Image (cartoon, rainbow, N blue to C red; front, side, top):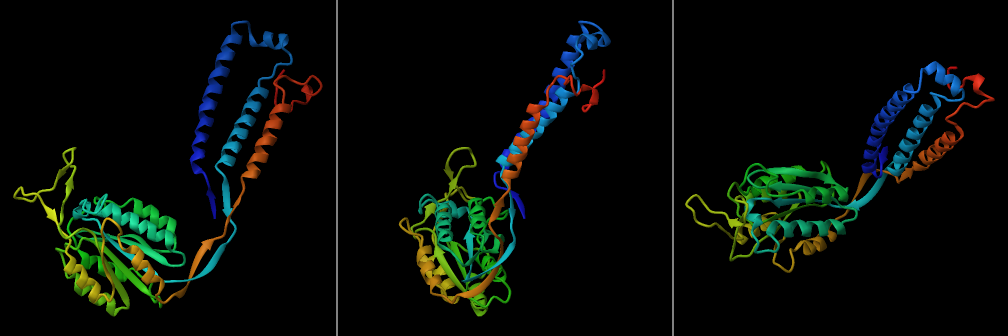
Length: 344
């Protein structure tokens, strides 16, 4: 597998067509300047060793040297081979609530941002387990299929916000159903689904969905984001901070529905944890995850990438040397060989 370790440097290749245009323009101006001194035939007699082709060849050689240097800086690499790596772990899917109520700031800096930070810290602790991400509001969507690529997991996590789903609401049951379908088929190890939400379920039977998941051998844990006293939902739609209101103009207060989440965890044979400003609870769940049955899993990954930039460095140096030995004027001893197509 081929890749560039620093592909952003390839943008420098745009210099080459710009330099070609500049060179063509300068050559055109030079020809016009020479034409003022006399006819081409007369000038060729006065300057018998002048070459029209050699400067162009030197310029092309320098352009190739520049291109080689840029490619070398971008660090071309090849994966030596595809390896099958055996690991022992579980499969873990996190269903994250991205409804507007998760913007409430009773958990600092907000329910959603605190959840994302906790998930990121959990991913840092994983080693041989697989993880997947689901986001939900009025509907549920797969953000990241089950994978052992923790780097991708954190990248997808960073992109999550309340605008990522088109329909607002809180359909916890739909998220649990989607999560249950997202585990690897025929996986014999432990399967854990962690639902992170404020519990304000308005759409479906979340407890029933948790019961069905448990019947499939999936443990459903729940983390309650928010405080029982509730909080206002920030609204920045007018260009400044306000708070969301209902259809009657009353300011909305979002409260943690703890009984709902406790019931989900109970029917899903998992654990319920209420988050606060000190801890979210994922560390506690991670400790429980480590106690679960680990199953050997196979993952195919590319071996360490081999650096190939040295070949382009060598080519660059060779081209610079070639440019050095090619003179702009004709060699009086070799000019009759017409190596560069010069005309008399």
